[in-house]
Image (tube, rainbow, N blue to C red; front, side):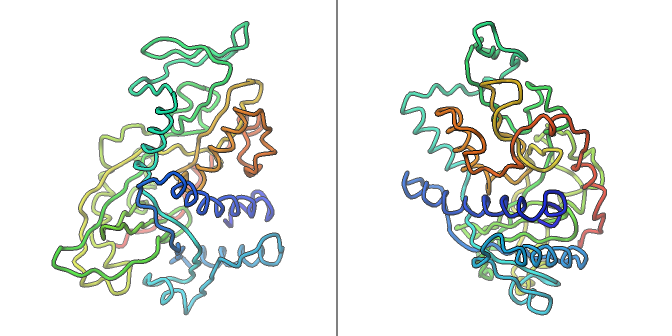
Length: 366
């Protein structure tokens, strides 16, 4: 949040925060309405910071937003130094914020929605990569899309291709970049009773350096991040599409993580059960690209969520669907203005992904 205030101002930063917060109850409503079996849990999130400079910067930004009076923070609890460690349970926490959040099994949720769409007549083509999208419309105004199974022509095309968007739309070269991340599943021995973990967590070690934790209903904990072990070497993650290999320096990071991070977990016996990698689509300014492509009527984009898609994607996708179906303008959707696809963003040569990789070069606590 501090960097968004510096870059876009308080009002735009608050607009993003409010949009993100609104997703929680939107997801809850969808899960309940559609009766989706996806392990959804409505809970609290705790954002704990261990780095003094970042803690001070975050608290200052929070005070600025309070002073501006542009939003209501009644759902946010802020624990300062002295209370942060006890409130969060994170050893050495200098600042902590808690707020309403949710966690879900994304695959189960998406499969349920896809099944519903197919049952209503949607033509779902799996294992069918798009190899070409015309840069200009055909004489009849349609766009040409080529796949390994043939060609289609459509007046409206949506690029929900995230990390791979630039492969079929070169305008996004260096604007949406494949970034490889790493994640794990941590469990405790069957004969051990693990301490209760009721919240989801972000544990911030420094600028751009954080781990995230999601407790699951089966008692396991999903933990991702491990940036202190590899982020300074961009060859491990920047513009990398291969998720068949682990990030070797990060593999041992999750061993003992619960014991060294959380009070009360020292004798839990928690250990790393599985580790895997995945490819995210990072945008060069860390804001997703949503809406119609400039100068390409009918060609829409929903991509570049920078590893932060779950708290944004549902209402972003709903907005794009409204734009496609009803012709609604971006400004009428409620999506933050800084998410809009603009000519200025596509022409910018700034790359904040790489500038962030030079920050927070700290030693991992192994």
